Length: 571
Image 1 (cartoon, rainbow, N blue to C red):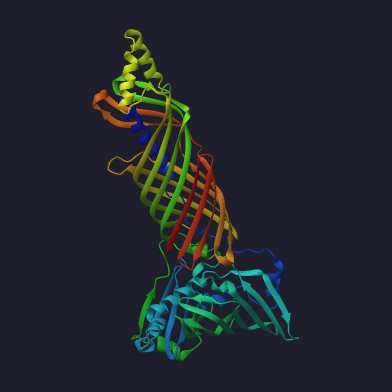
Image 2 (image 1 turned 90 degrees about the vertical axis):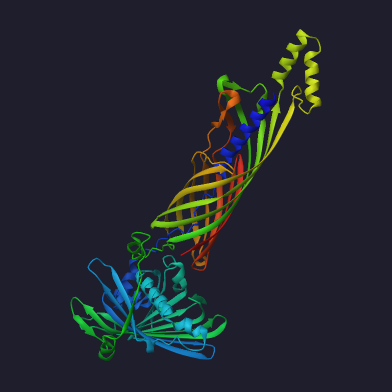
């Protein structure tokens, strides 16, 4: 009976390890589900643009002047004032596009024109070449969201017989987090005698622009025409006031086109003096790496006005899970003795387990395609369990009765002796076995996600294995899945989600605890458990700035409930 007690404790250890392995792996992807840009089918707004001579591509000029053509040279003059210090930088942006649509973007400059060497550290940071490179990358990103305005917001105001003002707002669905401040912009196009002549963009609320906190923002664009009648930007002036690292700050950026290289008109020079300046062979240049390897097809999707999360991510997660489950059978394989059923000694229907488990995990992920993310994780799991089994003592009482029939009082004496030594095997009752276990966890997973406007859906799947600390062998790979539906509060960059969580737990827990010499074979177990594989899920995800996010999930099922918290960084 001592051996039987030892074997039962071993089997509980193995069983709890297998049940908790899948339950305590971090099983979710921080959601930044790509949301489809607003695609209005309201033809009335399109007719308004046509009616007043506004080309359909004009709204994108407010996002990025680089969207005017595939081959363009622009001059940028940047003035920064922080506190009482002022600096100025002058440089050129040169954009070219090959036959496959790949864009090459370069900054051309003379060192004397880049003012970042003053005594004020904040000015160095604001007007350094790296800051200019970030500004250029922003222009490039905005270029890809050419159609990202909300057609339902188009309004017309007739000032007089010659002048019309056409206003609209940019779509709040499509813009990614790092340039999402355009969601707060109000745009007004001035049309004079059927010809767009100017566009003004102003903010409706404060926003962050890089390391600036912008209170007031205005973009004034003046239009011109090429020889074939096409509208281009003659000048673009951006002014902003606010703060930079808690100091009062103002920013002024003046963008003017220098030259266009067109398949129809050839070379169109807007400023001969500046073209000669940028053509100086002594000028320095820096190539701007605007394309990322991942996700594949990312630029193709962005050009359709679809927001994508940053491709790489790393996160830490904490999960606390409570489990309560029962048993349906107890069978042990005792080496050469074969399989032995212990249901007569331990009543499965009256036995149960209470498990509390905490897991800490670290995960890295990458978007391979805009809708497909893969990740790997590793972590630790701490399990505290209490096994409460109903011990019937049927076998020992049969032995006691047999001994008493042969020698009166012998069986009773044996039972009393065992009880005096702390082994009351002849007495029926509850047998409680406390367990404290620590595991290592490794896993791989993938997530598929799609979205349209405020709504999205995702399917997250994880394959994980655990290893009891101190052992070398990893357990079987276990599977879990989380189908979810969600709603995004676009203005707050927050998502609410509901769904379910599936854990692939069999009704039978089978396996081996290895070879046991005393049994002349393996110690096998086959335990029937009463578990429900599905649980409901509810949660939220909140983006904090353009890189950070926090996620909280709550699961509730028939045999388990869990809380998961995660903090992530995307880059």
